[in-house]
Amino acid sequence: MDIKSIEAGFAKKDMPAINVGDTVKVLTRIPEGPDKFRLHPFEGVIIATSGSGIKLNFTVRKVSSGEGVERVFPLYSPVIERIEIIRMGKVKRAKLYYLREKVGKHATKIESKKEAKS
Image (cartoon, rainbow, N blue to C red):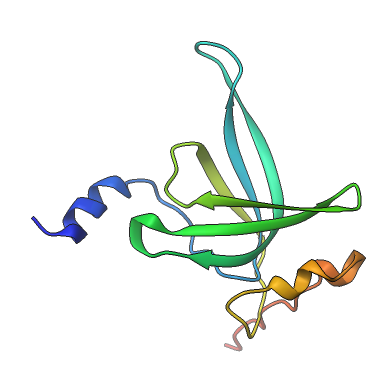
């Protein structure tokens, strides 16, 4: 057995194709009791990705009460219920760490991808 076939078994969940610059809503499972859970949303801009294959991580940044909050999610984590893409962004960088210094609308405004002419 090779590594690719082993990783394919773990990556059963269908995840959307996410890219740096996209605005996403990540819904995570929070346990409330022995057999209950609730979904907690975390909405923000993807500022970085790292790793590959089954070990892909992505960093989401949002501004909450005037304070910047970043959270790193493993893409194939069992804690993630689903990922919703709110808006697709067009960026020219692989890491958007410069958004950490931006304030207000400048911190979330990223150009949308142009629709393909048909």
